[in-house]
Amino acid sequence: MDIVVSNAAAPFPLGPLSGLDPEALGRKAAADLGVLHTLATAFLPPMRQRGFGRLVVTSSVHARLPARPARRCAAR
Image (cartoon, rainbow, N blue to C red; front, side, top):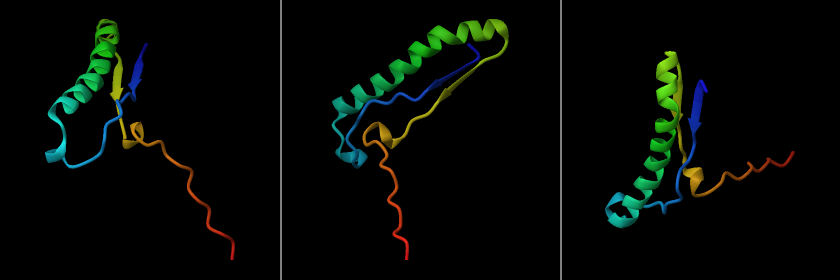
């Protein structure tokens, strides 16, 4: 494996940081970082042995709300 992409993110209610439940925030962080740790543990050692590899980590708000198709403008 040369490139591993992690796009995993646990759902989480959006809101101001000051209003977040600390326990819920801890569970969110543990879930998201747990996936990253699992991937890094499995794939980084062989990548280092070969001298090449990439671990790409990305996420978005779509973990909570999937994207909807854009509405088309009516023809004039």
